[in-house]
Image (cartoon, rainbow, N blue to C red; front, side):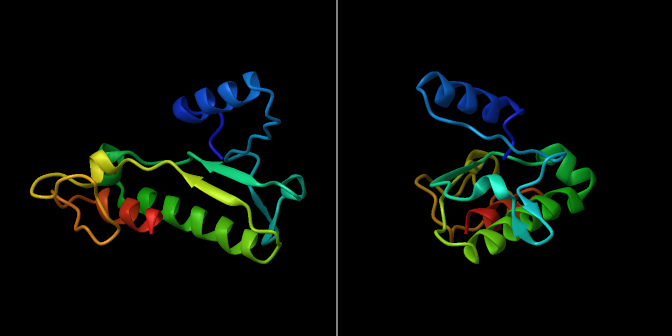
Length: 128
């Protein structure tokens, strides 16, 4: 998911250059259709999730964007769970924009976001 974005585009291109079959999804071609995984996901072993509408600045202006990113991932995971086999999910997350001093890497799911921003809690929750 997010194969046309900056990171997703590079990941998709690299996988394809290695001979991996890539099926990209995006906001106009969603992973979930009618509460079920897209038919092209049948038998897929790995889903790389690099999608998101928000960034730290946009989340401060409109916190609903970051919450929508969490909801999109949750909807996809719920749909994938009921259509076995469940693929491995690789989630790209921006820990560097969620955690900061006083926390030190490696960050854990229970680490509190710092400094507190509208961006941090939803992105921490996506990684959980």
